[in-house]
Amino acid sequence: MNINWYPGHMKKTRESIEKNLSMVDVVFELIDARIPYSSQNPVIDSIVKDKPRIIILNKADLSSIKGNKIWQEYFKKKGLNTILFNSLDRRGIEELIHMSRNITAEKTISYEKKGIINRSIRAMIIGIPNVGKSTLINNLTGRRGAKVGNKPGITKSNQWIKTKGDLELLDTPGILWPKFEEKRVGLNLAFTGAIKDEILDRETLALKLIETLVEICPELLEKRYNFEIGDSSPLEIMTDIGFKRGCIMRGGEVDYEKISNILLDEFRKGVIGNITLEFPRENTDGHIGV
Image (cartoon, rainbow, N blue to C red; front, top):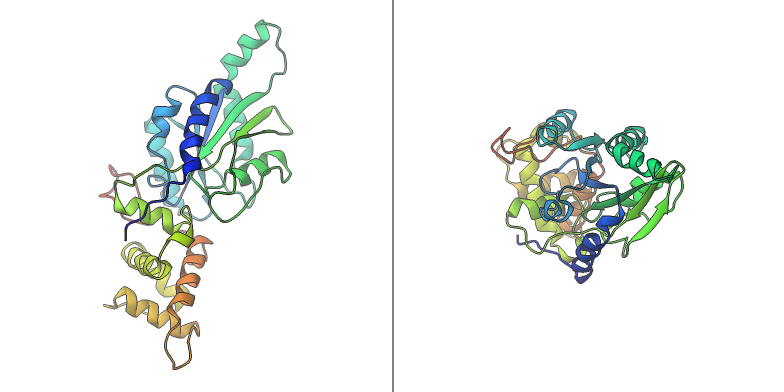
């Protein structure tokens, strides 16, 4: 299953980020805590360079506790500041504000020496589509200042947004990269909804998701859908779940389109369980879950 999605506005987004980077004090880079490797745009390092950066592991309520700890330690070893963020209860907001003040303190002091007092900290928010940038902004502002949706590509242009505190945020549209060198990266992005479903074969994607979950957390799949995997193939598993969920068409055949939608939706909402799909390669041999 070959997956790539790089709309024209993403090229413009990269150019805009590079142009506006000098205007900000710190970069907030959002990545999906379920797929930190796959959801971290590899071109960001070359764009941001030495600009102070905070890695925000978003949707940490959907990933595993063990996975969150391993990834935080990984980024710490790389010298990057990280926080866990959960939009449901705003967990991580105060830590983010505090960390932003700390890493921009020297710059703030230099402004104060020039007589510029109470200057807001300017932060640029970057990340792939549907990673939760607008939701983070709304949690920081305490209002619905940015459009939020469960589809990638909601934010179409840069916009400055002021918060109640001393943060001023520059939101940017989600940005992917032209080609996924690793097949699993494209799959992980598709599993979590970072790529528009309209361009995907959702039935094949659901089968690939089943295959992945059987590999990393079969017990969660069995518990959620009340069956034993045994030696069943992904298609046999999907068929079994379809019958159990009553996804039956006329003639008694399984409605694979319907059960595919259910499987993808329940994974994305964390209904199947808290799942981390990948770990740092130096900790495991790649595609292993907890």
